[in-house]
Length: 224
Ligand SMILES: O=C(O)COP(=O)(O)O
Image: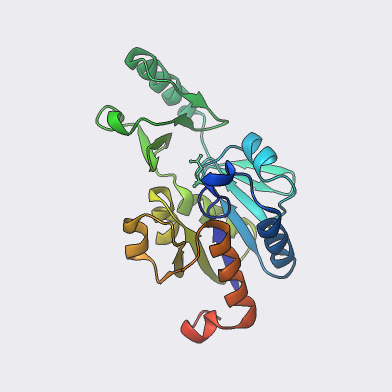
């Protein structure tokens, strides 16, 4: 038994298409998800996914980089009340720094703030990067931890195959049994991957799913 956990931006969907998923990738994932568990593990908020990935029907979602699970219409928030007080104090600091931010249901997003990485350090929160964008989130939370909680809820006991491209996929890779990087992944992600695909973005995901369906992936790895 295995489960596929896929990142969204620059993995399922490409920047070139404004991060809107292509019909080809959507159909492949929808068809695959009818046979095997397929989870999208993304930094994105639900409201953006509803637009960018309209019609995509994976087994479940891990959103906001870990703390928000979506199974069917059921939303599960992996956070305690104290976080919202901490978040408020961070928002006040960001205001003082004059940085533009937006707030999800749980985490804080800042786009294009790579130059401010020294200032974006907090004792009471974790800062996760996706290229030049930052996400400020509860301590002890990341894509990997969110996925492990989901896996418990689904009562899934098999192996995890993860696919991604960026820094915030590294914690996802840490909980995976087999790690796959798309061709457009950052070097630091490719370096820790078990397999680096020749194809970029959604074409890479399609190629991974085809390798699984044909049994070719399992000739390379013992995951069953
Ligand atoms: O950074 C985001 O908002 C989404 O990014 P991800 O799907 O690559 O995790």
